[in-house]
Length: 98
Image (tube, rainbow, N blue to C red; front, side):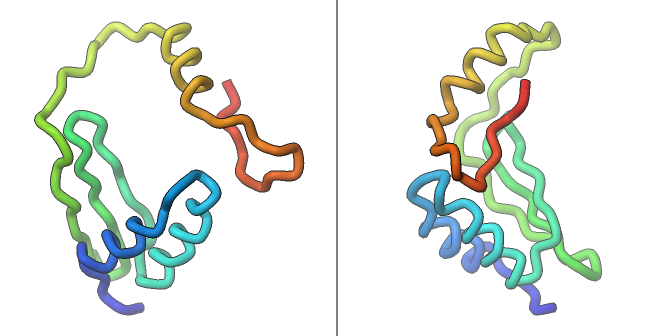
């Protein structure tokens, strides 16, 4: 597998205009050698991982925010569902199941 760079990942991500583009984005970063990634809510940075311990980090998008220790499950569910566009019945993109 090739070693990927932050610039390659950002170029692939720049093509995502809606949720419908996400499967193509995932395929593209997989073809670069990305095996998985971790996105951090606290500041928006993302760690991308590949084979042979290859890792790159996309820098933070915003100043760190504090995450509460007390979950508000019902508010979370409402916000998550509001964030998801309604999908056509034939869509292959799954919705979150809550």
